[in-house]
Image 1 (cartoon, rainbow, N blue to C red):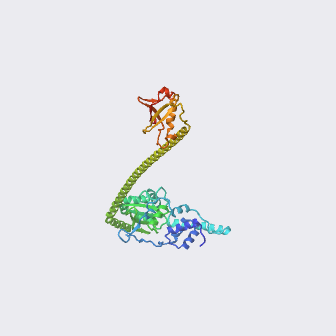
Image 2 (cartoon, rainbow, N blue to C red; image 1 turned 90 degrees about the vertical axis):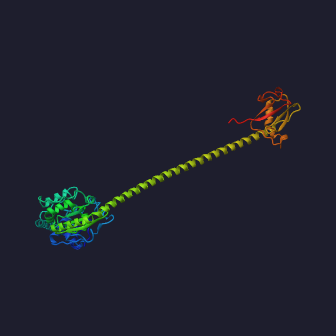
Image 3 (cartoon, one colour; image 1 turned 45 degrees about the vertical axis):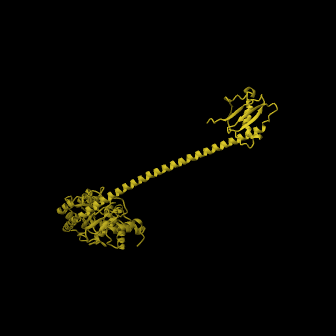
Length: 472
């Protein structure tokens, strides 16, 4: 087999998918190549030359009836229903949409160039025209491709009546996507019937005119089922065909939407379908449905309870998160308060240390100044006859003689540095940084420092040294 382009491989896969792998890969390649890689022409040629097409391996019985096991085995479990159920009308990787885009485009791949290629293309065009005329003569003009927004509903009814006669009275198709039909069947506790149509199928017309138009079958479908249909040339219907393993058309399938996550195939007919087989299938499915209705209700109740439980768990989780958030905020507030208190304490300690250091520096400076003043203080002269006694705050007494002309400032200077005078060393005398001199009786502060000792009559008196408190 020669190398194929991506578009040719896609067309070949689409042809084999629709025909149910009725031909092997080499035969499918030959028929596609002979039709210029036109999928529609290849399908017409396939159905014209295959008198009794059979699917390669259909897991469901061709004659219909219920599949084995109670209400059949689950078709979709877990999340598998999303591929063709919940995602019915969405764009997905499939071949049905590609078939519509590729239809009518003749591919000249595989032929030689030049004169031989021109002759080959001419023969191909004539053969395609003859095959089209032959298929039209055998199968009739065929129906128009479905149009409209949905594969099911009025669009399908209109297409079928346009193809097979306006006198057809068809059952009511669900107007919406496949996933919407599933939801409706689940909500109404009904079975979902899926009709997959192909305008190239041999028995499509007889099924529409003899089965779907049957008054009893139509009434049964309208009253007891949700009916959804689609043309397999459309992407959504093609995906549904893959989901239910439909390999031959027309396909008539009964589904039980047991839950959101589970869909069961409980009956399947395809190919040449008789009204009696459809009636028997629908009756058996309804009877089986009644026996399992309680199961479906229980599943729905369980689903509601599970949803309520999840909501309660979500609410409790949100409350726990809110509580954790409040606790975290309180913890942060406490940490911030403690950090602020530590900062304030550290700041207070720093200020105290700075004040103490400043005070010590001031004391050191004062002592240096007094020591210098003591060194510069002259000894009493011979004229110093006015003896003054000074009583200190600690009770010590010191004496010194002054001249009558010495001022009160000289007495303050002596009192300020007397602790550093040689005659007072070792006596433990301490002079406050700030002080005032007072007379003992009557008590009077001596503040006129420019007046002399004689003017103040301090000779032979005892004065007091009192500490002054700081202004702050």
